[in-house]
Amino acid sequence: MLTLHSEILVKNGKKQFAMLPYEEFLAVQERLADAADLLELRRARRAEGKKPSIPLAQVKRELGL
Image (tube, rainbow, N blue to C red; front, side):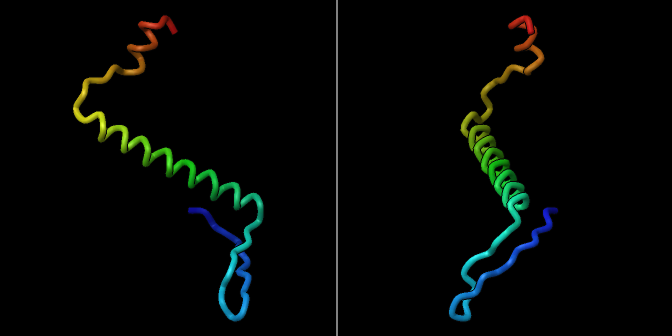
């Protein structure tokens, strides 16, 4: 779990912005990117359906890696 130390800025009695320490902002940004990657992977897997795949180890063997 990511703990945030945000400061909320209020204008006219309404919350307008949340400020984060820069390191926490970077951590949030990285987690959002990871979540977007995961969603894209899941979409790709659904699109592929039951098509056969090749294990990574086999691909490496075939490429001599």
